Image (tube, rainbow over all chains, first blue to last red):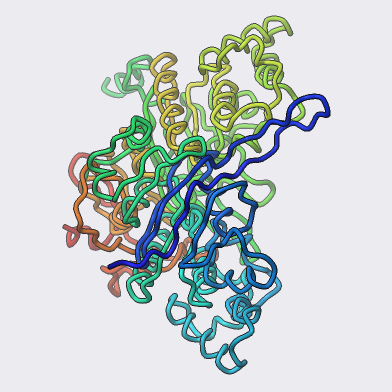
Length: 263
Length: 343
């Protein structure tokens, strides 16, 4: 029996559009009734064009923007009802890997400090244990121990993304949200990071919510796919059914738009 | 007698060579000294032809485009040797004034970021009309009328009212269409497209490729595509040049190069990308990794194979001597000592 890590029910996010005294307030429904479940050790990919609400969904799940309605459960915790220190405590159970490894690392901190920061704010481990954990993480993501003392600008794009991954793994989270983790990287480096993410997943039985617009990458990485269009999930299926037998016309259109090479 | 026959080149035939780059070397002055960012590059482009440049960032693809346009970064960059023959005129020797005449008129370029390459404080109509007034000496009314025509040609709906829009009022795809309209305003013979769709969604990407193909059929413009997406290459081009560290790694037709890569770098570039497959199974093999990254500029130009440090086939010979360009069957060119051991 697989364990449900994340359960999202009827999630809604809306942004106010006009602010006039005389007209009724209008809203942009960025996420409009999204529901799905995600089991431990699996990957759910959310695909769609820019503006379809993929990232907004992820941000709302992580409580980084305010959801208007709906329910988000991480394990047995109701995320949307938490406040203050309760919320802070639960934050280290889910982590983000960001798109741009250049702007998502603090340029003034050394690599080891960046990776240690989630452990510092968690405040559970002793300095020595934290040190040891950082060493393990560096090894897991394929960075050399002597690189701990370097600053972000001394790393290449792929190495920076490895630091971002190590930071996300630091607190042994239940859920890792990967928001376009390879789209800013060069093709050759992309393969290194995708292989690393898969290797770490099987090693530590990680659960990924994987956001991407690159259907080739999604096909390679995911177990389930949710196709979003204008804030709604228009098709949800497991990997084989979605790619071998797409049902919704929008999914078909997306798949047809990708230029392919015949080997 | 035979000599004279050679001189009568069939200028208007479809197979006429429009642009011929011969042993082009471009040097860049950096803190570590003068380095060849383009190292002995040769290729031909036919009238109305299609050629793609692929490779990772930092391999000299964009620099090649800038060299063709005479837009090398100043004062750091310069053409050290070689020729860029365009209609029998050597652009490598041309004056700035002459290059200014050619740019926009005969050779145009569209860039990766349609957001940053349009001027935010002018309307898109004005930005298209400007090109026409400068290069074609049209007056204001004529230029505006032609701008509307061009917007219509790139399929922007209700062009007559949209010419008064500012770039921020358009979507990314529409901005790229405006860029294409500007680039094609003077009906250039060559259009250089530097990663024209990387910033766009897949469905919009497909529309832009369709548009480029359609306009090419209409105007007979030759397209030089710079990209890292092998899928885009297969969609758009007949010929391909794979660049690595400023050098040509492999050249051939798209079918040759994709089906039978003759250079380990090309093979790696193709195998590293998870290509969208029409039918899939449970099986998911690991992606092939090309370890490491492109060497820094300071190592460019050394007399050895610059890919050796990332290559599984590398031997002492690769580390000692730069591989020559070998021509295999049907002008399939590769620069690798061990091309025969690649299956």
